[in-house]
Image (cartoon, rainbow, N blue to C red; front, side, top):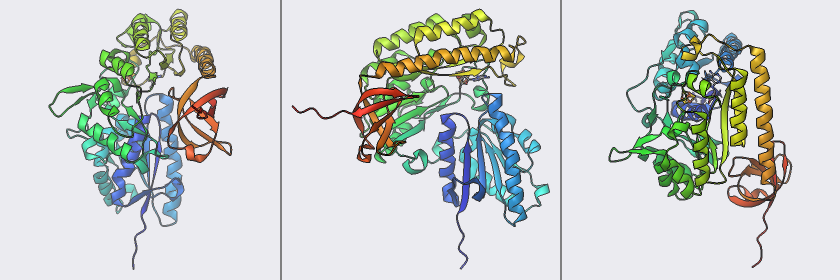
Length: 463
Ligand code: 5AD
Ligand code: SF4
């Protein structure tokens, strides 16, 4: 009998959480076509690189990985096998045919809007395999489709998506209409599109039924969500949160990434009303200088951002804020940079991500001439990170002595330890049996270690 072994799929994911979600959807879409995931690239029949184009460094990684893959492909061919290679994600969307030209051993190049067409592309690419390698052409698909991509992709399931199974990502919105002048997202992910409410609720319900306790809603501009309900009315993220709060078994909700301009009253009210909406908000401001914010086309001032922070704190006093910052945007002076340090001090972040400005071809920022010296960027980034790291340490220290509900997700690094997350997304380690895994437990925070909290399980107090 000629038994066909399942083919092996290896996906390497770069960049944001939306790519993590997309990679899992691609794996799900290919499973019915005989592809089983592997963690070992060397045994793969198909390797997909799910790429990120947000900064130059992220893009460059793809071409060096393709160089390594070419060697693997050659080795396999030398021993009578083969390796198919697909480049997905935002670099594929941005560079399209250019990748096929620069890296002729690639079989497929396709952007994030084409994932539901992956089985068709693969069938075409497999057909091309019968040609001599020198004559093969990559299948390229960087079109923005008319049809609903999500309706045509398998919804998130427990086993493939989320590893440990207690937390899951759920993409509710994709694309961006904000056009910040430094950012490629509006070009690579396209215009803002929200998934219909029923589709989101159904996927969340299915995840909860499979044992997921915490969902993080994803979107490039997640709080611009405006999915249609059954009557065709647009529902915002705040209203969606109330709907998801009704799902049995779902205990925690998070969302990322938000734009300050889309933090509307309904969403702020949801933070006031819903305990299951976690008090941690990633709300990038990018810069504290009004001049730079204007040049970045952020459409808000530093003072407006601060007022927003105050309104959110009024609704949810223990809200922990996280942010993104860019240093060295063209024209940024020392005074502009000092304004950024000031807004960081004023807000008091629990964590933050910071980047040196990276020119992205095709964005308005690429036409600005007053580029900042690399050495200045390096120095500013170091100062900014020193301040933010201190804030993170202080925030962790301020939790010592509190009792926090911790979703215990896994065994700890040390024997006899388990680990999980606080409402503020901090990692928490404590002594305890693996029976604790899978539920939220009250934990006394007794100390901190690098980037995490040390806890002790709260003992039930006798009445
Ligand atoms: N250069 C540096 N950082 C960037 N980001 C986006 N585009 C650029 C760029 N061209 C950062 C922003 C954004 C985060 C995801 O990446 O801070 O919020
Ligand atoms: Fe990029 Fe700005 Fe849209 Fe965020 S809001 S994805 S930074 S254009």
